[in-house]
Image: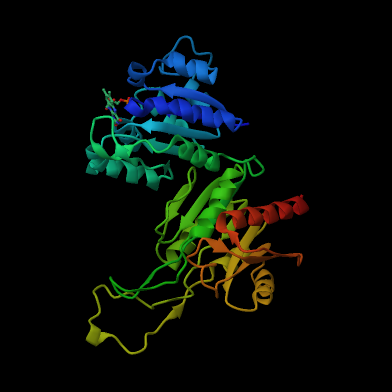
Amino acid sequence: MAKIALGVTSSVSLYKACEILRGFQKAGHEVQVIETRNATALVAPALFDALSGRRTIIELFDDRQPWSVAHVALAKEIGLFVVAPATANILAKFAAGLADDFLSTFYLAVRSPILIAPAMNEAMWYHPQVQENIRRLRERGVQFVDPAGGFLACGDEGLGRLADPNLIVARGLDLLSHGDSLRGKTVLVTAGPTHEALDPVRYLSNRSSGRMGFEIAREARRRGADVVLVAGPTAIDPPAGIEVVRVVTAAEMKKAVDARFPSADITVMAAAVADFTFPSAAARKIKKSGLKASLEVVPTADILKGLGGRKKDGRILVGFAAETHDLEESARAKVRDKNLDLVVANDVSRDGVGFDADLNQAVLIDRRGRVRSTDILSKRALAAVVWDAIEDLREQKK
Ligand SMILES: Cc1cc2nc3c(=O)[nH]c(=O)nc-3n(C[C@H](O)[C@H](O)[C@H](O)COP(=O)(O)O)c2cc1C
């Protein structure tokens, strides 16, 4: 059982928050409701008190609260923070870091995953400022359940209705921290491709989408770790509750990883770092007529091998290998040559599996030669298998 904070704001769809509350309770979780002052004008806190069995929090300065600094105390207790419905106003306050009531102050103190389900009139939803606020929050790892289309309370038809409460509950349960086997551990994960510029418009890269690394980061977070994700250029949203460091080139990725490696207990390198780069990038676009028939490339630094050489004090280092053939043999060689604890080798030769796909199949080989082959799994499920293998290794190290 986990404790979930449910923030509710003054949208007409507020009545649906009761169903969301019930959904989390049915899944066995305890829910603490936080209302904005304006929300209490639409639905009195007594209804949420009755449904949740706990006194709804509204005010920041409340003499009757048993805690001295309630927003900080509650933030430490919860496994998930959901805001549904979220008004345009609360999105703006969260995005700006404004903390002038309990809900907005609490947002700044929360470290667990955050899920927001906005609801508003379609014109408000499409206002550039609202979209900008959402973009900023997404960049910080906040997850969203976007509004649905249909009949709106104001009489208009369009996009802006609060998403289906069942969907919000399902997404919330998915984000909820699972166990705490990695609590207190710092995990460094890399993901995505790198882009090596030839000139301002052309680059050398690969088909990595970043999905596998993002799932590895998500699963570590679900197990309670503090996660830093160093990500190359990707089009996917980062998981909630983790620090994301964006890089573009292999050299930038190396710098970011090298700096953070000493404070990481476990490092998982799932990025598909370019093996080659250009000796230098042209400052201006090279004209077609100026392009040579063959281009000179130089190798990039082997980040993983560099870390293997530095590894000590019980740190665990895991590498990924994207292979089109001889999976097991290549993985075995990589464990040895790069001084790794575990290699996850995936077959990228087939359509729909591996690179730029939702599914993956892998062979895991650890430093003691233990081999595990998986079926074709979702990348999320494979991330769980990888973490189980890493946790086995940690047990052996104790
Ligand atoms: C009946 C009514 C319904 C409203 N529904 C919404 C809504 O769905 N979404 C929204 O962003 N604002 C809505 N508003 C406007 C917000 O209540 C208003 O911006 C308020 O200042 C937000 O305060 P809060 O975010 O602290 O709850 C509504 C206002 C009224 C009076």
